[in-house]
Image (cartoon, rainbow, N blue to C red):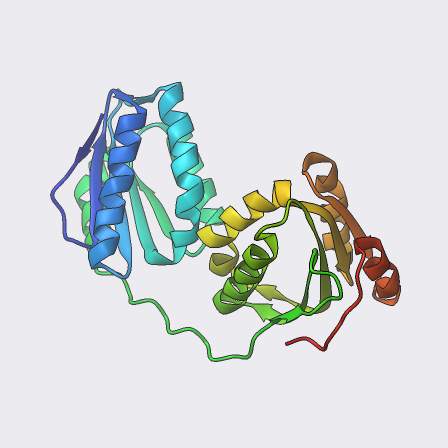
Length: 261
C-alpha cells in the first residue's frame, strides 16, 4: 500500500509497504497532480518498507502513468528515497542519471530525518525560457497529404508546439500522410521539451498515420539510430543526404511550394 504522509505543499511524501497495486500507483500520481496545481515545482519523499512488493498490475500501471508524467519533468526538483533494498536504490540512481534535471538521492533508513529535511527544502523556481528565434519552420508543400518541416537551431518547447500543431492539422481528415524533415542545422534540443506529453501523444498517433518519413541531412549517429529502429515501427523511414533532397521530395510525393513560413 501507499500511505500519503503530511508534508509541505510543495512535497509529495509517501510510505510504501506490503503489496503495491494499480490503485496505489494511481493514488500516488493523483497526489502529484494535486501538488502541481498549487506549485510550479515540487519534490518527492518516499520511504520504502522492507515488506514492499509490486504486483504485476502495479508495475503495468506504473509504466503507463510514468510515460505521461515524463513531459512534466521540468516541474520536479528533488527525489529523496529511503530504502535498504539494493535493487530499488540501483534503479533510482539510474533514473537520476537518465533524468538528470531531477536531483535523485538515496538514503539509508537511519537517515530518514535527513532525507525528509532535504526533500522539504523549497525548490528553485522554473528558469525563464530563453528568448530565441524558432528552430522549426513548417514548409508548404504541393500535396496536402505531405507534411514537411525544417530544423535550423536548438529545438525548444515552442518549436515542439509548432511541430505538434502542424502534424495534428496534417492528420485531420486523412487516413495516411507522408512526412519530410530537413535538418539544416541540427543544434541539439531541450530534453524537457522533447519529452513533452503532447509530443509523446503525437508520436504515438504517427505510428499509424504516417506511411513514409523522409529525413534529409541527418548526422551519422542519427542515420544509424533511425535505420536501427525503422523495422520496429510503423512508418517507413528513409534517410537522404543533403544533396539528395530532390529524391526525398520525389519519394514522399510532393515538392516545396513556398519558402519556410
